[in-house]
Length: 611
Image 1: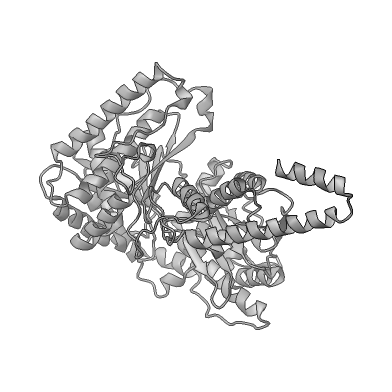
Image 2: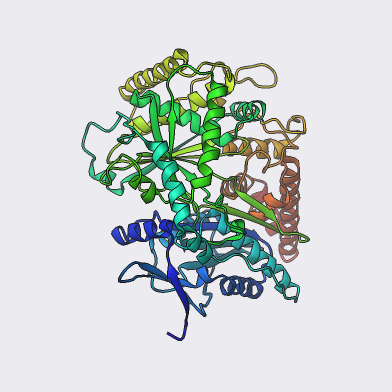
């Protein structure tokens, strides 16, 4: 008891997570994981001190959870230590490092946590080169949501900078999570929310059907239960969606929700649909809510009427207006909302969830020649719902669909992804269209039929594993700079709209770099002055590119080479310089060797080198 500081009830969101963890202890739904690549000469001692200071500052990070007699409680401990797993993989090849890293991430996330043993977090620091570290932070979602994770990151690196320079730092204390829990338990908060949600969901009596569930029983191969597919929008379509957002004053999230609602209406044949969407939970009328560290984000229903009639822009604005109103009550838990609906507790309120993800966090540490690239994987499209769709914004929207393989076949999910893309492209192309335009849905059906026929034709001609999972329908083939068709690049997107004009490669080094970038990034034309990050690159793609460049030029290139030379011209010049340096070293070694040989031996060695 000496190490117990205090205890208090859980929020409704935490109670839901605790219940799910108890009922499915092996599930990864409530486990968050962040992976950063640190390109720096890291001061490990300062880094550890910074994490310990942040843990000391926040009661939630020092908490454990106990299912008490009357209700579960959160126990805050006075002292909780910071333990860092350290590994050195510098002796492994780049390919082996990537394979080991992927295995480590998967294994660490699957370990889960003992909720009675704080901290409900694990940390690993893996050195892959003299100036590169992989940092993995795994935690239970009872502690943090995505917003809170960014608050922690900001504090950690603020303290790190101070400690690294031999200074201390005093940060203003954030509002504690227990204040938010106490605010939620006020009667007037619950009453207002109940009134809103009863009105919003009145008359809705069952989850929106999809009518594409598998007809055959799942095989043993589906025992993992979940699979995932991904597609990307072209840069042109993505730019058109941004133009639609700016021109019609609707958010990109609203556009994505609108397209998904239309798709559900088309699949179900119903004009009134409901799906789940992630909300921040930070619109509560509580002072300092933006500084609260804890799980406020959660999933709530979105109800949309998709009956034909209104023009697209008016409909999207109405949808956005309804979402703005809903934000006042998004502190409600999903369990509470369902209890206020006409749907029984034995049923799900919805079977599909749509996430609109934040863009990857890429931060430069101020005042230093070092980089931090962080990939927030906390909301990595894994829920316990049958279908979860995640939209990742950027120069090209990337869309993933995670689905329960016991309920849905792979081809059905491929079609659904392509239909979603078609609807988004149609919305961007004609913002003035009437909702429920028959031409749009005819295009969906036609592409589905053509895909099935093409797949059936190919299955008679070639093994199934050689057939692509996605067929891309194009209005025309892309062309090279001299006007010739480029059929080998039919699946690639055109070059994004960048500030600099396209400048073609001038030598073999730039040609090789531009070609490998284009294939890895899925972009048809890459100019020598194009920036890797502006093209949508991140460290996972960077690892693939460096591996391929190392193999092509027969060099050992560290990952930091790309981050320090982010354009094609810069990287090509650096590769040429390294190759010249290696050649000079090889010549020096050869001359040293030749000095100790006879004339006949010299001739033999030179003859062998020239062969």
